[in-house]
Structure formats: C-alpha cells, structure tokens
Length: 335
Image (cartoon, rainbow, N blue to C red; front, side):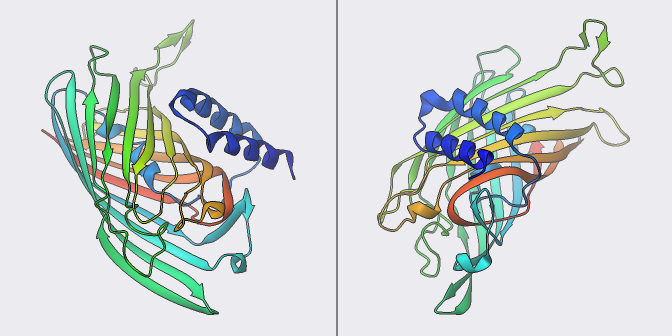
C-alpha cells in the first residue's frame, strides 16, 4: 500500500471513532492531508450534508430575517475504492443522480438569538444491476427537515455564532426500489451542532500592503457535527462532520450590483460507517477534501451565491459511487 493510502487509512480509523472532543484534531488532520495529495482526484464520496456548510451569504450580520431557495446537484457514477477509481463491474450500483431543492428561512430576533428552518425536496435517479440486468428507478419526495437555534451574542459584531438543533425523520425512507443508504430520508433523528466565525484580514503586515483597491480580504469558517440518536428499521446512518474555510474579496458596488465577491473555499467532509441490519457497513463511510471556487452577487436585498466543489482528496470504505463535482446555487432575500 502506498504511504498516502496508509496515512489516510489511519486517519479514517480515528475519524470513525470521533466525538465532540476530537473536532479540533479532526480539522488539523484533514488539512494535513493536502500535503499527501499529489494530484486532483476526479470524484467525491456519497453524502450531501456537505451542502450545509460553505455558504457565507446565509451567515447573519444583523437582526432581521432571510429567506432563500437553494438548488444543489450531484451525479455519482464513478466507482471508487479506497483512494482511487475502480472497475465499474466491482459495484452493482451504477449511478445516483440527485437534484436537491431546499427552501429555508432564518430570523434573528435581536443581536443574540435567532432560529432557522430548512425544508428540502429531493428528486433522485438510481441505476443498479440485478441478475445481470440494469434497472432504473426514479423517485422524488420531501427530505429531512432541519430546525436550528442560533446564538450570536459572543461578539458585538455578531461575527461568532453557535448553533444547535435537530434533523427530523420527515424524509421518505420507504421507497422499495431504493436501498436505505440511497433513500431520500435517513429515517433518523439527529442532533446538530455547529459554529461559524467571520472576519477581515489586517490591511498591512509590517510594511506589506494586504488590501486590493483599498479593500481588505475577508474570511469565514464553519463547522457542523451530526449525530443520529434515534433511528428506524434497523438502519443507523453514520456520524458526520462537515466544515469549510473560505477567502472572500468584495469589490463592492459595480454597476447596479452592491456586491461582487469571488470566494474560494476549502471543505472537509467525514462520515463513519453506517450500522444496522439494513445498512452496508463495509461500503459506507468516507473522508474527503474539496476545493470550491464560487462567487456572491448582491442587488439590493437580494443575494445570489454559486459554487462548484471539486474533490482534491478522498478515501472511501469498500466500493462507493462518486461524482466529479458538486454544484450549489442559492438565491436569498434579506428583510
């Protein structure tokens, strides 16, 4: 086994047993993997909770509300084993193409407290082989609703926030032609914990100017931990940790726009093995690192955000279908 594969395997075994106390160590270990990755990987492992981080446009800056609609896309068709692609014949599943549409709302009651709700709808195409024949199944239904409470009173400018909430088992997980790990909903109730930090880099470092056109560069960081504690029908989804750090530069007013901001984000995503009689533990769980160039445009109270997320490293257990990129778009309105 190559040294890179050994290092990734060791780190994955640690991640499979992580708890809240290990989250800072997880972040440092995943960033260290960049040095072990000699070239761009062409896929990403199964999982969509990574869409919940890496969105600076939804971080509150003042009291008031925001509503938004989000569209995400993921087309998994590349079989992946360990840290490299594998022969398609090694996996009976051939394709999972998913269109995610989410409606969300958050309201900050004051400088300190707020709440957030997201309601997803998922349309999925699943192609799998059975007895030498490939069948295609299409299904759409509501996914798992997420409810959050937000606390932003730790800093006067609301640049540091803590979140806690629940993922509810509202998503469909009974469609007979989908496996439990392919179903739109997990059937589990999950504890959600999160945090974020935003800020600006200094204008100067000694005598070195760090601004562009007189404007400083900005940054953000987000993290989210998901722990299933109630489940159904002998399927327990794996624990997940997703995080993102990003560099932002806002050009300010440009024509009719009041914000033109390119963004470069680095996302990490980890998931432990699924468990239960209806799970497939040997072929579930992963570690991945993704690079996401994107941009945010503002027009009055409206904001439009879009990015494409390209994996630069991944390690999956067993054989799992992967995608060459992930796409995310969000249109939001502040009031």
